[in-house]
Length: 119
Image (cartoon, rainbow, N blue to C red; front, side, top):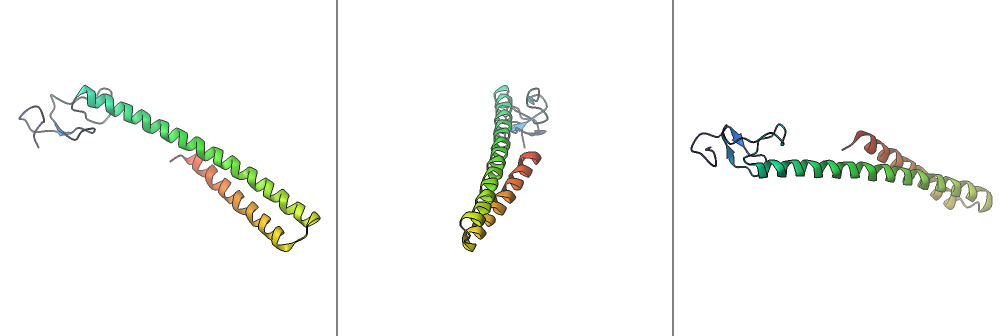
């Protein structure tokens, strides 16, 4: 593969646009370990990296909020099951609210693990 700007052999490809890059054209100051063919591609790589980090941070926050919400629903379902035992002793209602509490507790644990481990 030849360099996009010169006739010399390319040492790699631009991580943003995919064009061939020689040693003279390589721009890697702001892009980190990845090669870029121009300052515009290097800046675009940095912006893309910042956007990806922001999306991952927001996803972790969303998973944490879902975990708290699931734990809250598990507590309310447990309260409903206990209330059903004393006030309305119907086996279906007791079983349903108990099953909901277990499912919400499991989903809260699952979302909490995702929030701690990251994506």
